[in-house]
Length: 446
Ligand code: IFM
Image (cartoon, rainbow, N blue to C red; front, side):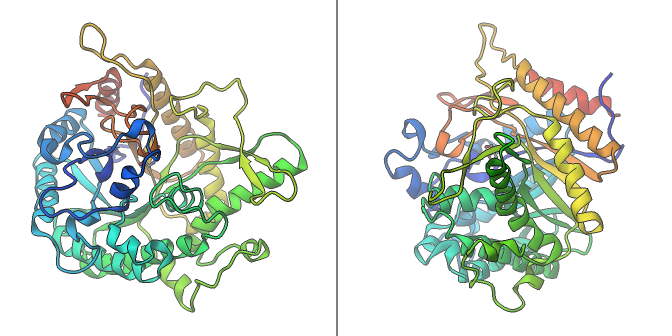
């Protein structure tokens, strides 16, 4: 028996601009921080770049047909900011706008609701040159961009997301330097966190002022229970610290209008906060997007280490994805129940804005891609989601990451997250068995 979800539950698939579009030099697009990062030797596995990616910029009609074939209600995609404002500010580039306008029209013509993410990590390089997210002015620029997009697409796009995963963008891009812009600030990146969150609040204000009243506005945040590697007091403190730096630091300002007191006790430099900022950040939201893949295992580092925690291997008995991530569906149930318990009435309705897995898929001799491990992953996570909903958590939708195999950032093209296989040499798309499975699951909901 297929799992049953509420009648109006929103089924979807997700992508992001930089990971699929390609066409980096076309129609007036300006460079983004990822263009520069990919050009620096050794940053991306095998020297892969997103120059062509899935060539979605030219093949979007074919891709929308694939989305329609799934029978999903919605498609989550992002806007490449530097296609619209090549330098991150000023007059919009008409050709960039025209692309997204055509995409939205194509979706609507096929009865698919667009869910638009304003920022999925591809900052215009010109803004990075002016300090990027360390510079408070970037938040103003982002609000200006949000206003522009709302005026241009607000009549046709009902669901808006400001940011994708402020935690990953901060940590990978600004603390560890494994993502663009490649900064290695360690624990000294609170200003980045704060300006991302401030820009979210300012963008929500700009969206509200320019969108129709019924528009739905939210954010997509990564969430993962933090689990200690062992039961030692040190590892348990490390897990509590990760929980503080990840979930609480990035979400309490949004949902409760305050940073956790413990951040000051850690000795972080919080001087980026100005009077009134927290009220700006804590804008009421129509939904809260959750990107879930797996819990994070963590352990303490030896006394005197520059950072008091590090990632730990998950226990060996867990099966792993192509990314090496443990498969722990119950983590999703645990996470959702915990959020409801901690935030109570302050938690808006939730949408799972990303969930999925990388599997080493290949075309077989018959031209098919059989991916039972992805089907199993999705099935188990939907069951975990259903369990949380049965436990009283208000979840309104679920988006598979991702529609297509795509450019998985520093990992390049090796990890394949798609429901649709992409042959990067020919750009031929082949729906995998999981595509048909997801389509049938949605159809079975009636
Ligand atoms: O591909 C990414 C996406 O861009 C953000 N969330 C996690 C995905 C898988 O790593």
